[in-house]
Length: 414
Ligand SMILES: Cc1ncc(COP(=O)(O)O)c(C=O)c1O
Image (cartoon, rainbow, N blue to C red):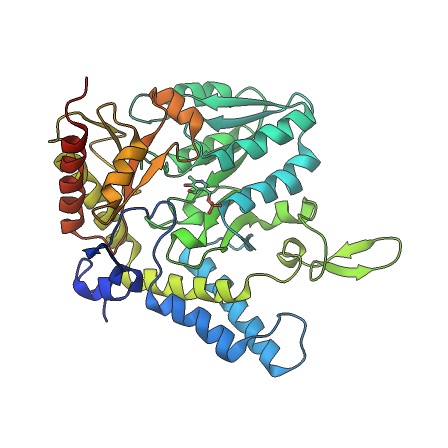
């Protein structure tokens, strides 16, 4: 297979075995990649090969099998550094995903450095995992949280940001691409202005890393959180990128094996970075699979993946807006995350999703772990179709036809 030749060809679809599934005899149309992506055969095979041929714990064994496992585990870190253009003074810490990466910063940095009266700046667009951990630590430290408002299309109010950042903000944390709207935030500008005003910057890259080229040198953030399972890698994988100088000052995240240098009955000293933050046995096979996912994405090219996802998303907006009663959220001009959120009249999104499922079309419905954003949009829930490289034009038709059935089943709405 040479995916570089044709991004929407059958050859790409053949790489994703889940797409062979049939539901009531119908082809699976998977439109929920923003929740988790499908996995190509090469990733599945890398995980299976690890268990078959290289299974051992890492960093501990003097025997060759363990050294092989360690080399494979560390090879992924090198690949991630190259793929995301990690600066010399930056490091990759493996985590279960974006949620754990953000919680790591909250526990290891904020618990140590946040003081009474400090401000954390978030936005109305955030996923709960970039909101609730900050709410907990703010309560604990008597700090305050300010939220950057958004306009109706999901753009951050940058005037608010430019004003707020002057008022003693310790850290700004926003997503790169919204999981609900697919819109992109100006993270380079945010990082630059935040640094000029003495604030640190965390970017939630859960939806950007799988869809667009991410250059961590260019972005200049202090922390960047990623979920491996949304970028074709195994579940339970992801990482936190952080500046080494910050990781050195931060407290350990969890304590146990592998993260120590020396332990006495009185206390302990910490292993070097990044191992100080990787306590216990990690998801070694998953990390090896994540390396295979990076290889796969690199073969196709992130520019092409972005172009493909965005084109399908914009085409979907155009097509389903022909259906009476469809209300679209986000922007008609750009959706780099390959995401389309919508509602059909006053039909509950769960009903829309259930009927679509009976036609083999899998979409996500609900609040998408962004209840404050739902409140801002004035709806309890939305239906969300999200795309990746294995989606094709006919998936849009399947969604369109399914939505026509939804309107037939529910008839006219007010
Ligand atoms: C924007 C955003 N942030 C954070 C997360 C949490 O990611 P995970 O569940 O992989 O930790 C998600 C998952 O959907 C997301 O879309």
